[in-house]
Image (spheres, rainbow, N blue to C red):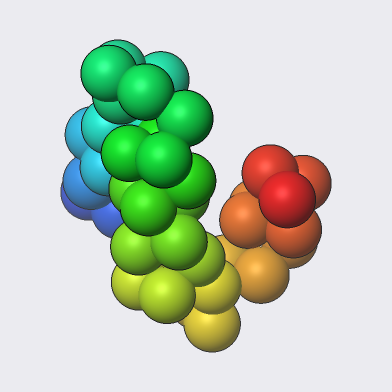
Length: 47
């Protein structure tokens, strides 16, 4: 689970470091697709 936390955090940085809103929303969509099933509560708080 700790390794997942590091990967999740790394993926999530793409949202915050996005150059514009569209890129941020695209990065968020990727996170939802990648992590949504495994950690639904964590990503539901992001939406």
